[in-house]
Amino acid sequence: MAHTTVISDGSPYEDKNELATTKDGNATLKTRGIPFSRKISYAVGGMPYQMTANAKGFFLQIFLLDVVQMGAFYASLILFLGRAWDAITDPLVGYMVIKSGRTRIGKLIPWIVFSMPLGVLAYIMMWFTPQESMSPSSSFFWFFIWSCLFDAFMTCYHVPYSSLNMFLGGDQKDRDSATGYRMGMEVFATLAGATIQGQIVGVYHAKSAQVCSQLNYSEASLRNVSSPLTDTLQNTRRAYVLAALVLGGIYFLCCVVLFLGVKEQLAPLSTLDRIRMPYLAGMKMVVGHTPYVKLVFGFLFASLAFQMAQGNFALFCTHAAGLGAYFQHLVLILLTAATLSIPLWQTLLLRLGKKTTLYIGLCMYAPALVIIASIQSNLPVFIIMSVISGSSLSALYLLPWSMLPDVVDDFKVKNPTSTDLEPMFYSCYVFFNKFGGGMSVGISTLALHFAGYKPGACRQNPAVITALRVLFAPVPVVLLLIGLVLFYFYPINEERRGQIQKELQKAEKVDGNQEMEVVGL
Image (cartoon, rainbow, N blue to C red; front, side):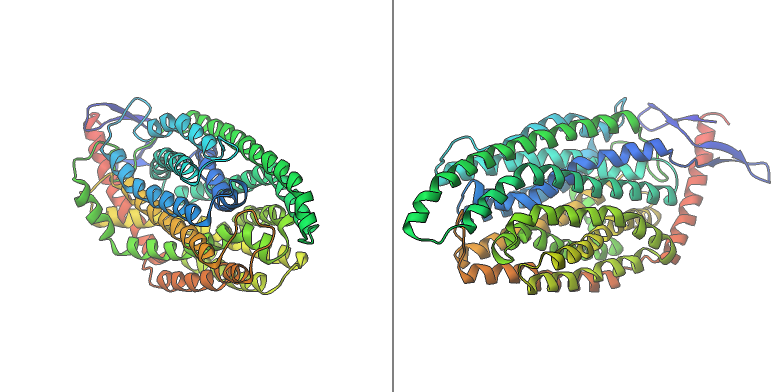
């Protein structure tokens, strides 16, 4: 039966655990699993972040350079400074979340619900070009401000959402299952987002590529083609706004599903209460936890590798591989493979353990990148390598995020008096991921600027082509190898996970006895 727990602020909290009687006649708490409907609702709530993040990751660079026709230097500033701002807001929002009090609908859910309308508005405005021709400074500030606003509102959505994993109820195995559903839905969201964005705007990118392919670069041909290119550019700008409206609508619906289907549940050694620990003290405890540091930096370098290749994929296909008319289809193939691979990695995770499965998944990525960068205009080979890359991408989605709750549990066992720091763990984790993404796209675009990239040009000089090849394969491969070395020293294996689970069960039993004393049992 359910019982009511009275927490420190005096408000009642409906706990879905059941009372059970042991052989010696003592009462104890028996943890119920997470209902399937709650897992699905929680998983759906993760879709907006992945849809919008991947739309930005695949399309924002080419949008700024070839659609807005912004200089590569200004574009690099937006991509790098915007992601740096996005990264900085994560630990700050995480701290504000843990300092906030509980409401009737919970502690984390209000952040998700009230940030959503502002996030939708900022996302749409980020893809809107207000004038036919803007000065470089006006264009820079317009897109930079809206990009920063969207990232801030999305942080207010995503940090509490990520922390919600620890408050779904159930035990470690239930949370791993919920994480599997979440990652499957998020990879599907990347597929849906890329499908929507790619199919709406991709047709106009294909028309531009077709017009460019017909040029012989004589003076007469340049005059004749200027009007079709201008018309296509205006249609492309409108298409980006339409895609943003569609994704914004999905963002709203996913938030509604999350709000209706998920109620926060207490976790062992957690109270969901307002903490009074200073920000720097809490941050020091989080970054001082050795397993967390090794997992975070391994994830940082692996994510850097994937985001470096992802951010340059559209430009690489357009200018280096001669497949600009097909890049949106290659993105769909890659993300479809990622979606279908999630059950495979979840199965291997249960049989081989998280660390071993992670190594298998990430090691597939490097050969695929090298082969893609070594060939040109070979669509069948690109398709095969995109499938392999997508499968490896799903391992990066699933495994590090399923390992993070283990690190949080390890911290709680070792520091039982330091409760309710989960949002700070998750916000710092997202911080390093976003910081890595900002570095990858900023450095990439700056490198293209120094190589002589010409916005809107049909053909780029050989230095730009060489830079794209280097940024797409050698650099990501080196970053991935560094990440694999760091993951090797990650200390929480399957044996340690079992020990953590036993210690949490002991702590939960103690908490359960205290709760029963409170309610008079």
